[in-house]
Length: 208
Image (cartoon, helix red, strand yellow):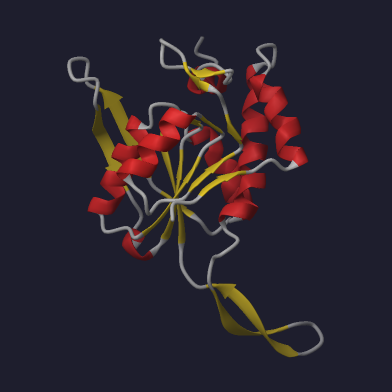
């Protein structure tokens, strides 16, 4: 069964209100996106496997639990970059890969221009991050690329999605769970999520 999780924690809701507000400036927007990403991380990693490890506290030796597998964060460039720091704050040992996509002007399909992953990615837990799940074209293509690299455990993490994007990703990749901070109403004619938060990349980097 395909897993779609909407994370409606009060702290996430509060920070989502800030990034949705058109009057929020670049600095506050970027910091809030990072903070929301960190809060989401607790839920998306709930089922990570651990293994016992012998350590010594200041008092006595003991058996503690540590993560069994490497975690790799893979942002879809460029907006996905805004979510990396918040996740890495919670998982400092996480490594980072990158996927760069552009839209072919004739076919409107996403094309890859950059893909680089850490060694051992095929055996890692991969957290694919992109703030907006709109048409899901980029997310679906990015998952294709990860699967071509033999990654088996992929989790998509976004901030805002819409029914059209969720349906596309469920159809293309039913094995990949979707984690969102909000599921909005629909896509408008320009391909923006409504009510959404505008162009996340432009707001993150102050390019508009």
